[in-house]
Image 1 (cartoon, rainbow, N blue to C red):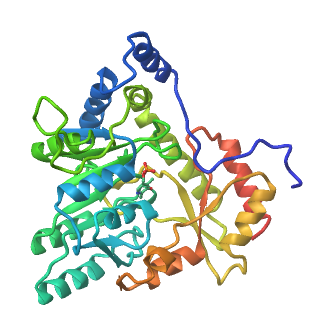
Image 2: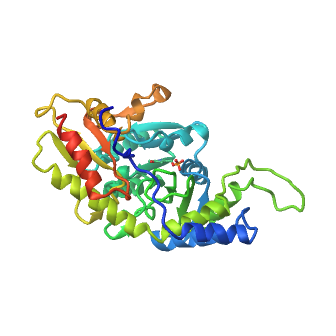
Image 3: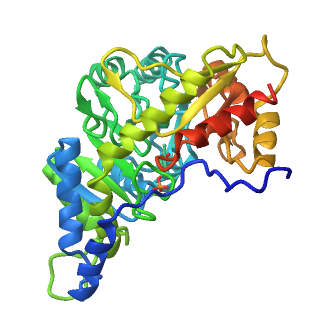
Length: 379
Ligand SMILES: *Cc1c(COP(=O)(O)O)cnc(C)c1O
């Protein structure tokens, strides 16, 4: 390591503000650290208001929210769920938790998300066979809105409900409407590396009052309405604590600032790398969409450089800069080796050529310049 005189630049570290502690402090002062309480109610209200959904249930993780979301949509043993291959494993693991199987779908090249053509093939084939998929999961990778018009139209045409995995996309918009408000149920994550954090946490959003009621009940052990502890449904312990919700309330005061800064960081990378043909900063926003630019990603052009993303990652590491490969497609994972896949060349190409750069909202312009300088030295 020849540059360890620099501070380490992390990919996407937590970025706390000044008000989180006030909410946590109040919870401790009031001896209200658990269970549900005013911070939890307040955090859920903030999220509903910001995203524009009628109901929100704050949970212990985004993964827990996807699990409950699948249960609400009635997904169970023997069912199939259509899932993009190009995503984090937590999009698909809960499909297995409920005894169903993911069927993977390739990406399109504009937003890198669920490809509507491949989705149509999968839906049409299942319609012909007489057993339709039980749900579609749409993901907005790195904050970039998926091609929602096409995807929602197909879902409606085939009568399949949509679970929107907006874990990376709080603050992004599609035709002015916040992501997290498009699915029959939607999911957010407040893991430590996401655009806002509660250290660990998630939420389920919906406009369906019955889904919200069920999610609350399932997340707190599904007790029957009896004076004693009686249970006839399998429940879970998935509720977010009133303490962590306090961190979330402080973070929600800052969401627009955080999105603004991530977008500025993306724009600066783009400007500094504009004349470097080996690197595309990308993807561009389709018309009428706003990405929160959770992570800035680059693709290498093999015509202009022999370097691989792994060469660059190791080189950045010697400058004390953390970077990460793009998500390894799930159909290439040993865990899902036996699962069906529609297409695959698009997401495989993205994985082969792509890298995520440090993008945290606490980065300064000088930090971005330092990353670009280190990158250019190796291209
Ligand atoms: C982070 C993430 C999740 C899981 O959220 P956790 O809160 O970490 O459980 C799910 N899907 C995607 C796309 C994510 O990026």
